[in-house]
Image (cartoon, rainbow, N blue to C red; front, top):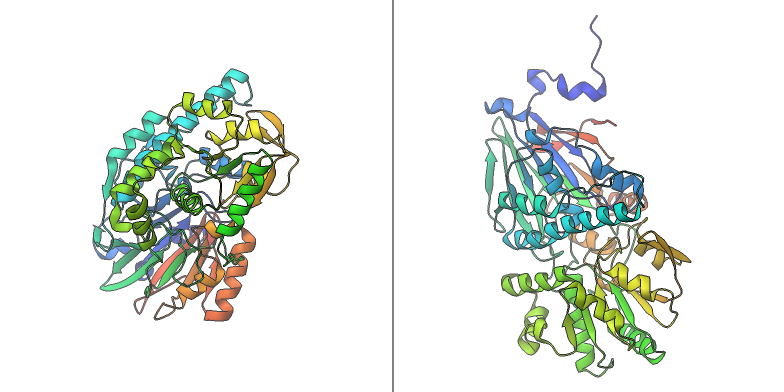
Length: 514
């Protein structure tokens, strides 16, 4: 008697009767908020169309944070890169796009589909990432700080620039057919400029099923969302999907609903009064622009002193230029601010520093100032130099306005660690710290549930990704209780079968390989 196929091999031994299916494999952002990569393989569904099947990645992000996550950046995906046909990219944050140059380095040469503004931002983000990879490798080699000899970059600036030629623009709401059995379109996610959800439609034997990959979901439209929204006022509503792959970053949290400006102004005034400076680790895209707009309003209203504001991030400067180009995505508030004050690049008291020499001059100043620099989680970039100098001084304030993933320097500083390693040396943390959750560009639990209530019918199944285990589990429980949905927390490398049963997708079984 022939041995029955093991669950891990079941997908390889389908009968013709079972063959009208595809599968999804979660290659990242499962059990963590970084490294988003989800593989769709339609080879089985394609049998009915006569094609050889299509393999597409939804996002191709870099792992960040804890060492065990970062080490995954050096592992190959469980499919040859040259067998992947395309990448569909939801937005330009590194945890969603930062592994694309590495995929090309491994042999991928297919198109990368993204919205026009996402492509413009990737042209900034990816070369900058390659440059930082090279700088880190060079530093560790010069100072012999690495266990690896020689330390190598994950990819170089040149490799990041080379892959950009493969990016293909796709407008919101435009349907793109990639193969006989697979098409997709982008709808607004309202997370950052250009951010999208990917609606993927699979077709087999005349039946269709829609998969929705949410990417990162922005703050949902309601009266309690704090001011400062730069792009669209909320994600696309009324989605219809048979299977949903959904983020869960803040699946166990409710954002404060109060206006952050009074407390922000008070924290800045107190810091200046004691002779200190304010250092803000901020994501170069969206978060920096939001903060600069808010600081401008506070200064004009006389609520904070007119001290120098330094935006020490070449990437943020370029991002502002991209924002000024894509006016079609502005929120009403952004339109008002630009109309009233003009381009942020011309504002008095705000200095955008491009060169290393300009950055060093900031540290020569002993007068109170506000320094906004990246990276937002203090994983690299110029913020490291500013913190290395200013963390030991109790007069200073480190202001957090974004999520800090466990294992990052930002997480350690925010949560009261006595010291943190920067450039291989331990730096004492005596500076004050404060955190403002209102700046988040991720929907919280009530907002996610509010958005899900706009679905006209419930999906067959929803898989939660892009969340720490506690956040994903609590969101699953909340969705099950309030919506009555079938919700599961995705596991790393888990394979989910997508069958077509009356036009609806289901997941009758899944496999997990390690």
